[in-house]
Each structure stands twice: as C-alpha cells, then as structure tokens.
Image (cartoon, rainbow, N blue to C red; front, top):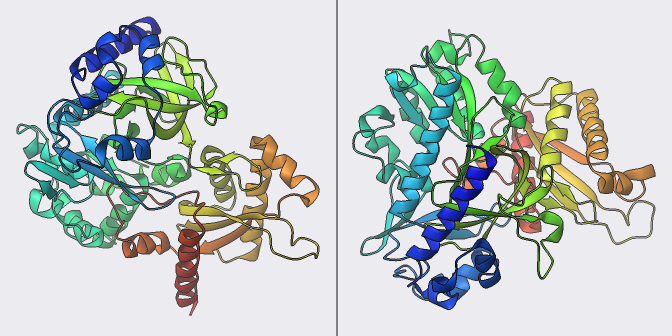
Length: 501
C-alpha cells in the first residue's frame, strides 16, 4: 500500500464510520449526517480524552450504552489502568473492533510470511500470555475485563484448537499461578508463536528455565519450531539484548504489534526497529497532533494526507467502537510515508518535566538501555519520578532531580557499576534532549539523577501486590503521582533490605 491509497483508504474508513454512527446520540450532536470530508469532520468534532467521553456520554448510562456513541449495545468494556495514576478506565469494545483487531494481527503474519516465504508458522500452535479471560457481567449482555480476555472470547471457532492456553488456565487471574501451570503444559505443544508484553514474557521464560535447569537458557531448547515472538505494549529497546541472548540458536524473530485498548494501530512489516506500518484500512481513522500544540486551543490536526516525517505527534483515533477524535495518549513519529510507517515514541502523559526539562520516555528508554549495556546488565523494569526541591537555603536544596528505581537481570551492587550507569544515563539524556542539557549545565538546574537498583523480581512483586501482574498491565515508566512513587520506593527498599540480609 503506497501513501496515496493509504490516504484514500482513510477517507473511506471515516465516511463509513460517520455513516454508521449518524443516528447515535453522539452522531446527532455533531451533525454526522452533514459530514462529507475530513475537513468537515475536524470542524464539527472536537478533540476529546477519555475523561471527556466518560463524563459527557458514557457515565450516565453505564454499563448499558445503547446507540450512545456507536449504534447498538456496547457488549464489552476493556479495563485498563492509567499508568501514571492507576485509575481504572472502561474502554468500549465492539464485535466490529474485534474484527478490526483480528485483521490487524493477520496483517502482521502476512508481513512475516512475505519476509520468510518458507515459513511454517501456521503448522503449530500459538501461545498468548494475556490476562484472565474471565469477564465480569455488568448488565444483561454486557461484560468487562482484560482486553486479552475479550479477544479470547471473540476468537473464531476454527482458531481455538490452535491456541494455548486452554480455557481453564486462561481463566486464572493469579499471574504466578497461571505461568506455573502453563509453562510445563506448553512444553508438550508444538509452539510456533509466542505473544505478550516483553516483561511478562521474561517472567514466563524464568519459569521455563526452572523446569529445565539442565538445558541452556535458550528458546531453542524449549520450543524447537518457534518462528515468531509477537510483542507489544511497552518499548522493546531495554529488553532487546536479553531477547537476543534467548534467541541464540533459534530461527525465531521478534515482531511488534501496536495494539491499544481503543484500537489496533500498526504492525511490524520489516525487521526489528524498522518501524511499524499503520493499519489504514480496518475501521479506524487516524489523526496526528504535533505534541508541541497539545495545549493549544486549536491545535493542527493532521491525517495521512498531510502529515510530515520526523515530527513528534500525539495520536488521535475515531473507531468502530464509538471513540471520536479521541486522544489516545500515545506519541509517534513517522519515518516513511510510502507506505505510512511509524515509531512509537512514548505517552503524552509520560512526560518528565517538573522543572521544564521536557524529557519523554523514548529518550529515557534509550539512555537507560545504553547505560545498562555498558555495565553488562540487562534491564528488566524501571520507573522514574521527579524529586522536588527541599525547603532550605543551603547549596543544592533549591534544585530538583530525577529518582530512578531500576531492576536488572542481576542485582547491581558494585559501586563502580552504579556510578557508571548513573553517569552514562545522564550523559545520554544530555545528548538527546536540549532542555535537559540546559537544566543540567554546570550541575546548576537539576541534580545528577539518583539511581536506586533493586533485586530481580521487585517490580513483578510490586505489581502483584497492586493486583496488576500480567496481561495488559504495564509497569509505569514515568510516575508523576507522588503517592504512587512513594509506595514503590518503600516497597523497593523493603525488598532490597530483605534481599541483602
């Protein structure tokens, strides 16, 4: 698909979406019957976030949304936690969205087979590490739960025998219990595809290693016919080194799927790190707002026909689940237009800028990966939060900084390694971000980062305690909520103390 057909496909998608929703509450409010062009749509439908939709359209009649923002009854709500505050969101999900997402995943495998014509990826089974497939009934015919659980409920009958885990294990909500039962079972199947978030996959691999302590810690030892690891949800850069080691001796490759609770957005059609191809023809209309205009009262709203390369955009979606000009919260940068290919750069809420440093998570991911690689310590997880200035007049007390809590595959205890990591992290951020460099110049504006290393397993234990282990739950990378970070800090300190005793 080249750029012109992609833009034409997007026009057609928008027209179909608007036509279907014209008689909904939202469609009548915004004159959908009169919309003929992208310009009409952008003129008549303002940008909104989740809270706007919840307050203006969803909350009053929840959980029964009938002809509200999408025709008919919304049958599912995908539960997702805000990664900075932890507040639960209920994201409408329809059968049409299920078909769109399934089609997007099929695109990923088409790209894989195109790159590898001798592929036998469909000759075995796929193992998907998701959350529980147990859904809670909110009202007659309306269910809420983990996105992976909703997807499992909508899997075509003919595909069910080719997917692991079986229903009894998929229903388990306790992540630790699930992988303990799933790991030995999976070794009895011809697994060709593995799917999940990188951090949860690594926990699963640890379980496999315990089952086979006499074998090399390599995927080829466990699944000899493995072809693809489908990952998504979080930036892969900090995990790339660890996965490269695990894939030694295997013919498998990694492919990224960019799927949010609101929509399936893009899939890897080339190699690792080459960007993701936007899914332009499957029930989602995309807009792109320059991140430096997000606070503007009338930001520029680009779409595929008008976007520019190498510009940081906040992504906006209108979907077949009833989200309209919906600010997703993710940021992307396009690296090609023919066809449209993007890199996911972070979150609009994932901005570390308590002091005007304007650091985005893509920059932190890159700096942390470089620093960890330099001390030969693969990162498992990390979080960072601003340190606010103290009340005092002595030198340094009026300066703020950043506090990192970092978990690596091994516990980093050597002072030389800790110092090197901190120095390289700081230096790389100075190279990547002009505002950060200005704040750090002559050690005047911001203090040197404070880096706290914690034992392996700390973040998984913390997420488990918050009942957010596994599935769609993500470790919050940038935490601007002081109470949430204080909880993590206290928990990490207790784990470190007990681990060193």
